Image 1: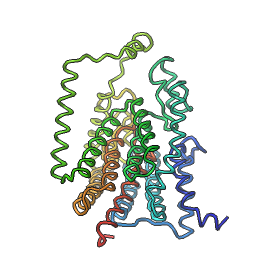
Image 2: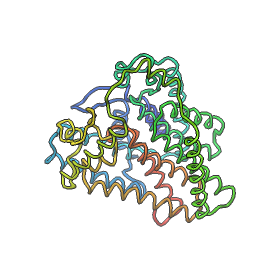
Image 3: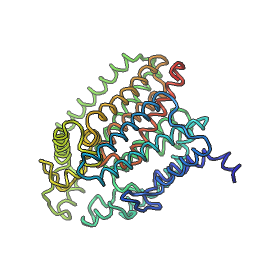
Length: 433
């Protein structure tokens, strides 16, 4: 058994990481001192213990992971200190635990990645195999309006049987927005391997399926991310096949934007938009309500966060306490009973203040600086494109779910950005290794 683990521990840990990341919230779920524990988090703890005792645990590998690790330690210390001024200490405790799991995800990714000769291919291969299960269950959900029991299905009980939300797939993600984050990450990873000329036909098919599922979800931020992906892929194609320089890429980008805006404006100015099926459902099934539109709701949540931030004099109201402030009626703007911020920038600034917000921003500026510097030295390569897609995915899709801290996908995307940035430092700047 020991020799088997010695030989295959990397593959075992990576497979279990992906499997439990995708389906873990439905596996071995239980509450422990107010925190939800399930397969993914249990695996994360067990993996770090195993890596520590076998001498394979790495806190960081290069400058990107080093800076991010120390930033997250500072974040953790600040979160712990915020217990002294927050109004809900249990909420702070939960957020601190979520942050610890985020740090654990980063350490796991750094430790396991550098044990592989080709980590990206190994990761995407496992991801692809797991995605077949996701796709199968999603097709079942779309065709039968049945779902795995979750908070999402509890919400569906409030709707009529033919409401279109009944036919929206969520798999194990408990929320269509969480599923949209997974799909955007999936597309970025699949595109990376397609450009590597590996499993092209199969991955192209699965990427198309991912885009279709994203369309079914009608995730607006997902549409924005897909548009950015398309633009970046077009620019990358022109750059690689026509020898365009970065200046020419900028010109091409603005041309595409101009054509898109002009064409869309022309279409919507001269054609009516009608969805007969949706109108029929609205007329015959859905009862009118006086709830706020989603855009107004999100704006009010942001305005409340701004008020909390000002009230805290820039220090933040404390770890996990945005929801507590809202629940106690401290928000001036109506939110229809919704108490989560729905925006990771607001969540971080409101709860942890200007210091953590600025440090988080500087981390991302460093990632982008490394990306640009590397692209100038070697030309814009596939590795730069993948990192660009992941950064775009993170910036936009982290705002799609209601709350940032507890979601493992957020920490996974951040960890992938960090380790891929480390790779650019290693391959293009030996002096920075």
